[in-house]
Length: 357
Ligand SMILES: NC(=O)c1ccc[n+]([C@@H]2O[C@H](COP(=O)([O-])OP(=O)(O)OC[C@H]3O[C@@H](n4cnc5c(N)ncnc54)[C@H](OP(=O)(O)O)[C@@H]3O)[C@@H](O)[C@H]2O)c1
Image (tube, rainbow, N blue to C red; front, side):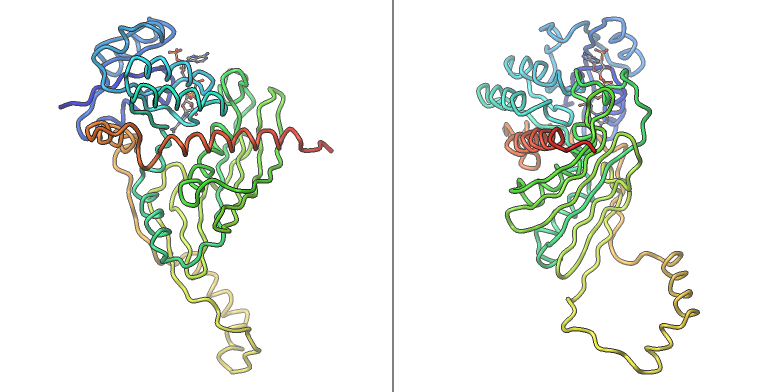
């Protein structure tokens, strides 16, 4: 049976999600709600959605939908999600789950009280490359994991019309971008036990740049940074005693996984005085090695191409969980979302404590 989606919000991400449903197993959007009936109608006409609703509190919006995809600004997630959950309608809520810990708890409480499925739309967790990374880490193939690092930043002009810069809508680099490496770290290693952060708030008062050091219970050390004002490598990497892995492609939508295994160095290195060893240090040999490194194939790993635009993986997860009678996804459970919301709140407080030189 076709899974019927309702869509809350007519922003860019709603359009991408609906477009991505063509790659989902058997799903379509049947309703879109907007603050403006006209905007809902335009969105619905452009994307072949039969029902357009003005307002987010109309009960008609929830009729005949199997789940609602909530793609409104983070500050509205709790109100919109709780309304659906209290009506017994499952929700997929765009990341970040909520604007703060209090809102996150409101959503989780409503989901649990009504026994209704609820999941944060951290779509990256469902990408094939991310699934492979998780399996690789859990298998122990990389040895004891010592370090994790990641970054997500885009250079944006400061624009209060852009929700990322609007505190009233739940903006900020952490909420919109930094949540990706933080969520991936939480998935792989659990909730951090120690965090230290420095950051900068901008003219609209949202956090624009954040650098975060953290430690997980297993001893893994993490280093993440995020920015609304500069481009980052947008990478994610895990380093163990016997191997390493990093995403190919941007961390939010990786299309492959580079990974390599090695043995730790057995002992301290001593001087190599042989002819071959000394030849390797010659300038020409060094140059050739650099050219081979720059242009040669990057060995190891796999391509895990993203089918479609990638949003269908999380959509399929929602449909699968609901079909199985689950109220949470084992991949993105409510406790993880609440822990991440709490981490983001803690980091924001640390930024406010950063001395300004
Ligand atoms: N997964 C991803 O790749 C990805 C990418 C970008 C954003 N996101 C997430 O998606 C969510 C929405 O982000 P966005 O950048 O699309 O946000 P946005 O443009 O600020 O808002 C999205 C939509 O929410 C509706 N809305 C409801 N109340 C609003 C209010 N008070 N002010 C403005 N709009 C309001 C608007 O639709 P109507 O005018 O029709 O009501 C608007 O088009 C966020 O949680 C964000 O982090 C995810």
